[in-house]
Length: 291
Image (tube, rainbow, N blue to C red; front, side, top):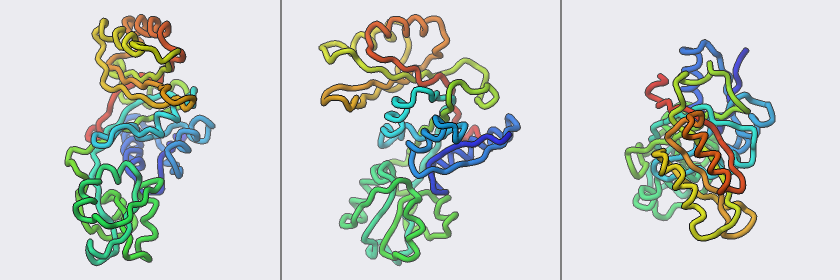
């Protein structure tokens, strides 16, 4: 059986690159063959798994420069059946791709909002007057560059090679230490053969809403984990979309949800939250370990 993996397309995106690394890892270490399935958006990639069109999705969740990918968080909150199985960490290096003869000729730059934000300082310094246009992915605009010689796109060097386009400027992200964390997501629990290790999970991700916006409401959930010595590696708030000032909270914990102390903490957490969702327990696989 061939495993189908959804990801953000078109070909050449960083999501596809992370998916290829994971597919190669599955083939080499588990003998599992995978078929890549590109989708026009992150949300559609996740819905493809929820609807049974794909067995897994590889989606970005956090960048070291620009922070969380909110579409991923919001969609995971809505789709109750999805579970995180693994995290992949991919180094990111952005290129300015264009058929323009020089930087002065460029009038428009396209890319995904995350990539544009990661290169904001460079764009302000070297292309201060260009029109910046967000797109669904880093590669969506690449096919138009040969016809539009005053247009550029921010994408990877691999994308430039795939589309046979020239790189006008390299490594334009504002900070050289640029990494994106991706989650491998399935519907329900996944066969252990698809996971990186049989060892206990190093991280658990969860999300919850509060019954009321009152002073100290968030302190109580945080104290539960602090008293047990469980470290929070990330906490993020997102609007509930019900009312201004109401928020959901997403947490990454450095612990396995199956541990006794975590089970105790979650039982206590339910008394302080309105809705509590365990998004998954998983290990982290750096891309360097996948090759």
